[in-house]
Image 1: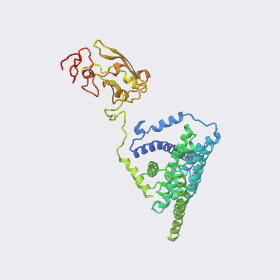
Image 2: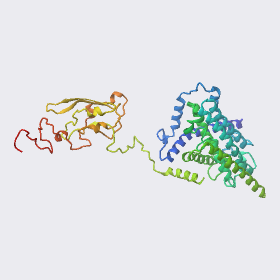
Image 3: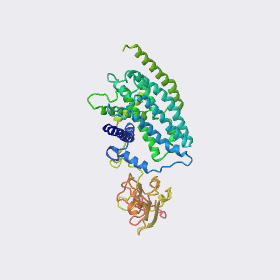
Image 4: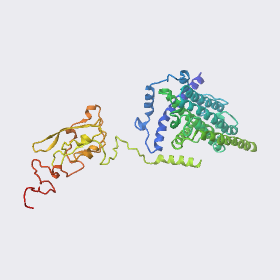
Amino acid sequence: MNAIILQLIILFGVLIVVLSIAAGLIWLERRLLGFWQDRYGPNRVGPFGTLQVLADMIKIFAKEDWVPPFADRVVFVLAPALIIVTVLMTFAVIPFTPGIQVVHLDIGLLFFLAMSSMGVYSVALAGWSSDNKYSLLGGLRAAAQMLSYEIFMGLSLLGVVMLAGSFDLVRIVEAQRRLWFCIPQFLGLGIFLIAGVAETHRLPFDLPEAESELVAGYHAEYSGMKFGMFFVGEYLGITLISALIVTLFFGGWLGPILPPIIWFALKTLFFICGFILLRASLPRPRYDQLMTYGWKVMFPLALVNIVVTAGILLALPH
Amino acid sequence: MLSLLRTLWAVFLHLFRRRETILYPEEKPYLPPRWRGRIILSRDPDGGERCVACYLCAVVCPVECIALQATEDEHGRRYPEFFRINFSRCIFCGFCEDACPTYAIQLTPDFEMGEYHRPNLVYEKEDLLISGPGKHPGYNFYQVAGLAIGGKGKGEAENETPPVDRRGLMP
């Protein structure tokens, strides 16, 4: 009985914390972007502008939630929910600390890959159901981009799996007690970072919504909280990818002195800020450049990474 | 690839730069003296109105926001009976200031004139008149113009020689 209650507390705790982090990122991103452009960013509402999130929420809830008459209504409503659900599902397998994990799956990593592939449906269906040229183009781009980046995202993680000898995220973290995987798997880390940015379709890989060419891409027809859900889904995605980078390459909760949860949070925050820095500084590539880059550079590199890692592992005596 | 990393680093360093933003209501921006803001009517050094109600400002105004009515006092000196600027129309182009022959109408570095009711944006003469000469101290139109008014006859203006007697024979 106590175990169930504990489980429920962990479940809702993770849910609330993750969602509030995603909301807080709206403020963090605008603030950091401001700093990197020699501005202040939102600093009026509440201390340091932190209540900006609340103001944004009130605004977005008060907006007219309009479904275009030409849209495919059911799919149109379903699409924004999908992205949040798939990302939140993945948070279930993230080991925040040894004790705090919603479900302990032996194949946590595979579960993550499966769920992140599901996220494509949200974007592609949103673009499809909007029945709008730009939205459809955005949805198509999202589908193609995520399919091609998904492949070497999975391949880049194989090195980590080989080193840890398990798909279990807890065991992957435990295997990093002596040495974080970011050192032996630096190539895998680089590939996963790039694939992660593409996976969350953040700048510089935000071609599905590329505002300079596609108005707003797949969410051009969305308004009100449905649009807000795409946004929250995007921020959840950033948090998720950052948490995964920390888990897979930077020793998860491991660290001296401070309690494990603090270490995990600090490392994750670092990578979230990295995502925002990417947005602040890099220009968006052309669509064909993005595809060429994925298939001709990153995909072979991921394969090389697997071969080299496997070779070294076989050569080293255990 | 290296250039991308250099870009990232360069952008990151902006975290420690000075912010360009002026936090407006607390910190006022510097406005140059020739800023085209709230319009005023100035007075000459003697304290009289500079405006001679020539209508040039009202004519040149592209949005026709200036209304006035000319009249004359007992000394033959022209002045506006009323002078009205509708600031909800004014586009602050500064043409009126350029057109004014007597430096009476001037634009000032002040833009904080927001109102909740539109009628409050209509400024009458007493709202527009200021106590000083504005941007042109020491200029007194009637003292340099050749026009005779009460208290100042022909040829009595500054840098003006007495009028030639055209009917006389003496040089």
